[in-house]
Image 1 (spheres, helix red, strand yellow):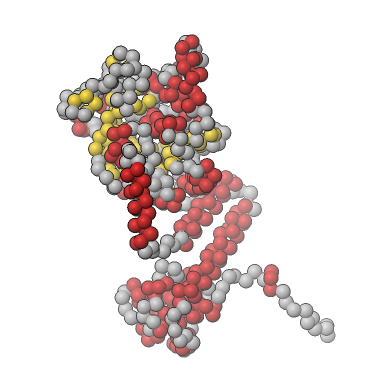
Image 2 (cartoon, rainbow, N blue to C red):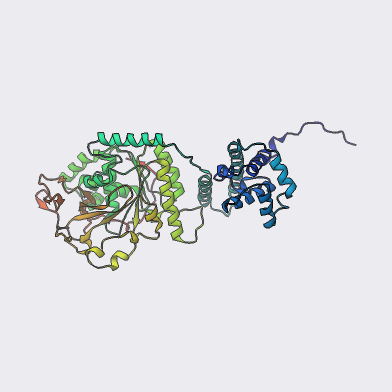
Length: 511
């Protein structure tokens, strides 16, 4: 007979699932003796939060009773389990009575419930890591797809377990007063990131923290040009750190368009280098305004919302980024999650962008396509974009704090508005939805040869002032020449939007 081994067993590597059975029973017992206890833990615990099957079955019965607004005690829970055929699974009436008798008070239920929730989260993380490890050994699974799946699953797990507690109103009032005082000290009344467009800033007070702003338009309206013009204003003129995620163009194409915008040189000359001496001189002088600007460009093709979240957090933490632009929303994906339709996926992307804006407390501007409804309508008002024209998902309109349309009437050969104002060379920025303020239209000059949007009153190359009647801008002159007769659709050598194929880039590039 072999000698008995008295060496103590080392449980360190036993790989027991994280659990706290005594605490679970304390929570169940407190729920059975206190009718108000469920309201304390209902947002924290689910049936699956309990490790022991009997406790899981009892909590499910308690949850069912509470949802139907029925009292919770030993008798009602036993009856509910009996009617659902799970009384024996829950240990029978004797086990339920025993649990309730072991607890004298529910005073510590909140603390105990948090322990149960933490153990459940630990088990979920173990399952997640095991799933990723198993798939990583499978050579038939693409590693990039596995990364997307893992990131999506971890994001979904974090969202389910992220709870934000309520806040007493005093600190919130203090924060609101601080914002108000800062706005009062600012002559422009800006409380957010300035756009560089005066009329737009008057309505919005700048792009506001935690807001999701959708900038939409049909192809050839100049959405990317408008976004890049704002990016130049924000990063170069106001020195506000910002990130630009381009899913449509490479970072070199973006920079070329910025150079054309800032230096006022036609894009074809930037591409072929055939510039006049004065243009080379202008390039040398003005390119310095872009050098060192806190603008970070990422041209990752097929960017997922989970990759965006990871990169955005790092940019905010390491570079102090104050605003993010995305060009454009419909080119994003939500890899790692399954959807029954593209509309459902776009809804998830839209909801995630709004959640990211709140989490980082910065504005996120996302460009979006419109459907073909505009093309089928007639007349001045018919060609005007509507919220119902947003492409692929009504959730975009629902999630957005603000929706803007970029609209150039002259593209549709409409050269005057209803008031008789000249619309040659003009673009309407239509604020169709604004949760925090007024809606309305802002008129800007659009200079297609430089893919640039301007304040009508700027007159950057000349000294002539824009004509106005009653404060409404009618047009502008540059170097003494009218630019209100630009042919519809004349964007110069750069295609306006949505028709430049994406090219692989080199990752985030500061410039």
